[in-house]
Length: 265
Ligand SMILES: Nc1ncnc2c1ncn2[C@@H]1O[C@H](COP(=O)(O)OP(=O)(O)OP(=O)(O)O)[C@@H](O)[C@H]1O
Ligand SMILES: [Mg+2]
Picture (cartoon, rainbow, N blue to C red):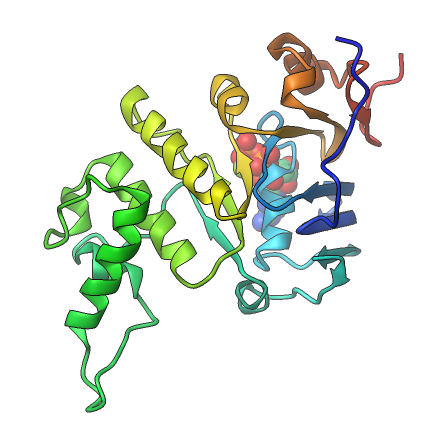
């Protein structure tokens, strides 16, 4: 494995440059730079407290950064709240999914963005038709349109959450631990969903503790430690052990591009 680090060519869909954010004296994210290309999955890895969620919350507008810039399609953008992020096509799926448990899939897809009839009432027919269209693409086996989502399996719930995110033209999807609560079969199903999204050119930041998932799904990894980026690597150029070495020791293998958090050897 003597490959040198090579990024996809072209303009990144997302570029976060030199982003820092502190909470009280704690540097949760310290001069971190990451990028993501269209149709690419980049896994953000690191121990608990490494700063992964904080970094992506800066992108999703949930947190305001103290320092750094964000570029979408090469253009600098202002993201200071979740609305700004959504306007840029950035959608986040948190581990909790944020579904309304007592209503069905269609109602969840349109939560807060309902389609109305010309009389101002809810257009359930139009919403269900759209829901079937989107879900049919993502998860063709899904049939349980009339049931409250709390009755669905973990994998089905995940597909509803993903459908909701991409329904409104998301181009950048952030998934924080999407498979943490799922069994092997459902994890595979989420993997299939992710492959569908890639075909559409959607870029995905995937936060996961599961190194096997990461190697199955991610094109590149960016590893963080103590708020700093240890390095970036293409999954095909590194071994699982090397990535674990990045996570645990901050040690960058030869095929990775070191960041400010890399241990000097
Ligand atoms: N809202 C907050 N207020 C204060 N400190 C915070 C806040 N959010 C995160 N932190 C701190 O910032 C650091 C980074 O946390 P973060 O949640 O980003 O880590 P993480 O890599 O997502 O970890 P995990 O794998 O446990 O989810 C930690 O020290 C955490 O305690
Ligand atoms: Mg986290």
